[in-house]
Length: 128
View (tube, rainbow, N blue to C red):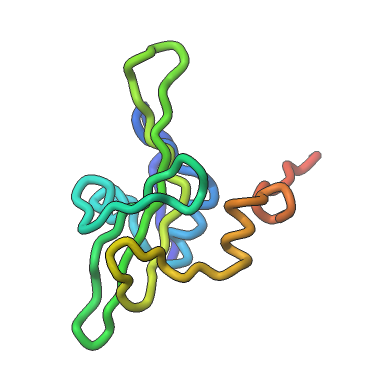
């Protein structure tokens, strides 16, 4: 199933990574924005200067959490306006304790810390 995402707006910027992860985990744009507006928990993000928010989903038998990581940017031209850069969104199987980061696979962690070492993180433009 292909989810059609809206273009970047004045207040929200979607990275290619976040769009791919939303498609992989079958998360809609509205679902991620709902987590941004009304999170169950707020933690420090994995990447530097980021914030991670979470909502509890699933059932008692199959507990899951949906996380999203974003960064708040100030616009250069207009000093007071803020723009939210959504970096990633993912579904975590299970529940994490308050203050405890979810277990992140090493390959995903390398994408955030050293994106230049991952050739798939920044896809090359075709020369056609």
